[in-house]
Image (cartoon, rainbow, N blue to C red; front, top):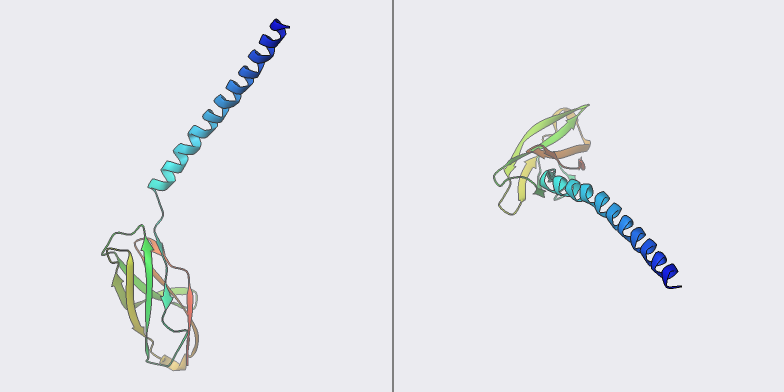
Length: 135
């Protein structure tokens, strides 16, 4: 009985060591991958307009935050015109805390009223698109 007990204990210990070794071997590359992705964190931008509707020639404010961008990085407001994104004369520099704010007054050229799509770009990052309606 003593011999059977020792064999069972040795078998159990062998399974535990194998399982632990496999987990450690699988976990090592995962930890390395996690560290690499943390180092190469992608820069991001958020953007929010101060209003959802604006009259022609009325200014509105766009504010947001950034992650992964150095302070003083320039961010620019863009407007979608057809299939193309066009940079507008509204830009700001990212502050030390990652925030930024800028203002823009839309010009109602050629009676182009309606929903306008905007985004903010800078430092290789692009914010989600937001819409402002021009009356």
